[in-house]
Length: 457
Image (cartoon, rainbow, N blue to C red; front, side, top):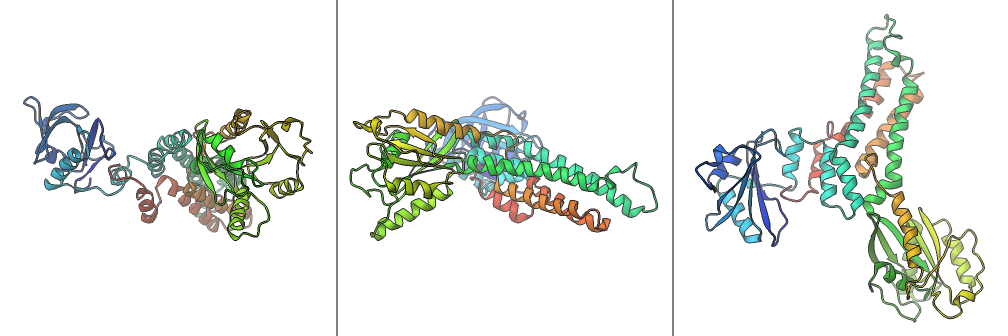
C-alpha cells in the first residue's frame, strides 16, 4: 500500500456527459467522506464496495449532484483503496472537485501513476500495462485488438511458459554440478538433451520475433504506401481518390508536387499511411531535385509501392527506366498502376509489358477501377491482421532477440562448455525474458513505459 493518496481527473478534458475524478491510496475514503454527502443516512465510510451511490459532491466553492463508488483494496485497479466521484461533464466542475481533493490531503497523480501502482501491487504485468497504453493510443482497430491481447496477458503467459522450460533445464544442470557422482540421466533427462531443448526454445522465440517483423510493426506504425512515378502521371489525383477528398493540389503543370503529401485510410482495421511523392525525373532545379531524392528514398523503404504511369500516352523510355529503378521496392506489394484510363483512346494505347510488373488500370479522376486498387490494399491489410500471438512492441522484440541469441550460443556450445558456464547464458536469457513481464525490468524500463501514459490512468 502506498502511504500517500493520489488524485486525478480520469476522463478526457472538455464538455461531456460525465467526468470522473479518481483517488487511490490509504486516505481515499477519508477524503471522499469530507467531499461526498450521499442521499439517505449512510455515510461514505459505510459504503459497500463496487456499488454506485448518488449524492452531493462538494468542491468547496460549489456543489454538484453525482455518484460515488468505492473499490476496496486489494480488489481494485491499483490494488489500493480507490474512490471515483462521477460528476457532470465540464472542465471547471471536475477541476474544482480535484482541487478540493488536493486541499484535503491528496496529491496530483503523475502520468500513468494509477497503472504503475497496479503493476507494483501485482495487479498487472508490465506487458499488460503496455497493452492498456496501446489501446488508449490506438490509431486503428488492429492496434486495439493487439493492445487487448497484451492486456489479457497472452504474451506474458507464453513468456512465462518458456521461462519454466528454462528453469527446468537449469535445475537439471545444477543438479549435475552439485552431485557429479550421481547418475541423474534418467531422473533429469534434460542433462543429455540440453542442446536440442534449447534449439526448440529458440524456434519458439524466433516464431514470436517473426510475428513482429511481418505484422506487429505494421500494426503499430501503419502500412506505408509510396505513390511514385513520372511527373504528371496522376499521382496526386490518385491520392485524393483513395482519401475520398482533395488533399493534394492537382495541376496539368508538371512538377507541381515538390514535397511529400501525406494522408491516411483504414482498411480491414489496419492504418495505411499514403505518401504522394514528387515526380521522379532528372532536373536542374535544386528544389525539385530534393523532392525527387525524397521520393526515391521513401519508395525504397515503403511497404507498398504504387508506380503510377500515364495510360493516355505511349509507354516512354523514362517509364521503363523508372520501373527498373523501382524494381524490388515495396516489401509487401509493388503494383504498376496505369492511370487516366478515362481519356479517349487510352484503352487502345500500346503498352509494352514491363518486366515482372503486377498491373492494374484505373481512372483516379472518375473513380473507375479504384475499387480494384482498394481491394489489393485490403489484401495487404489481411496479411497484417493480429491475434494473441502477434508481437507489436519493439521492446518485446529486442528482449526476445537477445534471449534467442543467448540460448543459441548455449545450444551451440553445450557439448564443449562446462556445465557451470552453460548456466550463465541460460540464466541471462531467463532474465531478459523477465523484462517483458516486468519480473526483472529495471527502474529505467519501468519509468519509460509509464511516462507514455496520460495523467489519470
